Length: 200
Length: 200
Image 1 (cartoon, each protein chain N blue to C red):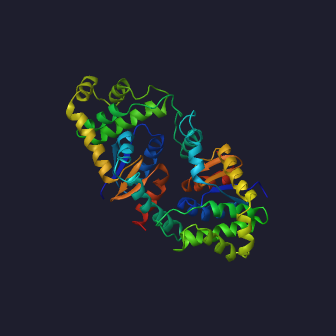
Image 2 (cartoon, rainbow over the protein chains, first blue to last red):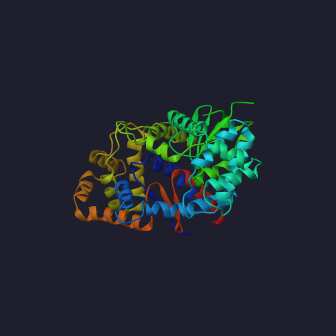
Image 3 (cartoon, chains in turn brown, yellow):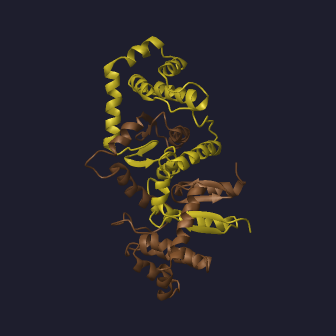
């Protein structure tokens, strides 16, 4: 028999409880014993907040492994980690200005922003990148520059964010199917099944 | 065409980027348009930390919907939310004391603890519940009581938690397959595929 799978759980975690049923089945399928290792969430979280270390170092280290691994699984090209997080305000404002004129164009623009950021090793969310992404989908630089200086365009994004909060959104990606909420890239499979079955 | 799917994303989120590819495919499959709605993570997180409200109210409200929904999908019975989080220290200490004597018995004990907590509407992680779970798998109450008073049993758990932190564990469930880390109940499918393919 191959080496066992280590399954760390805290009795406090409902998701660990849900996972405990599935990991046993997976272990059996591939002839692996599953060793359960109870831990305590309190000290784990505390250790990730120790003074003098980056915020949540273990979680960040994991993300740097998990994000590219998930991307390979889904066949998505991604450059990660990025040297710095982008400023996304300008891109989001530009998006809604375009959306109110042409929703399909706005989506193409958003894809161009992401291509420049995660898909290639381009600049990071600068106004210049936003203008370039606009040009890539046929939006004149001068028009977009003028729109981004318009207070109404700034208000438009603010209202969207407020409406999202009022609807219960607390992170992204967040999906609503007929007001049924799904949070996280790892819930897209559930969105798929929800649509297939009409809920459960 | 049925109502569109709302897809909230922040350009900053690599997981939103990954999900953007998959949600479009899902939308096409079920004849639903997907409306992309850029938001800003900063204000979303801030709104969940407002003074005078419970910590992360939107996130908690979502968990109360997501946990039972996931349980129904996986066919796992769960009572959730619980009136109060359990104290899991005693159960974790008892687990390792049993594990060092009989790993299979320790796992049966852990399952009994979870059955009493999430599977039924039983008491919540008290020492009494731990003793009852022990009895349910044939462990004499007096023996377990004596073990739980032993400083060596307390040290055993402390060493496990320290070792988990040193290994990079920051939450649960957390799975290692040959030192490849997977965090979250929503990564069990990836564990499955990792074992099937021998990695990717």
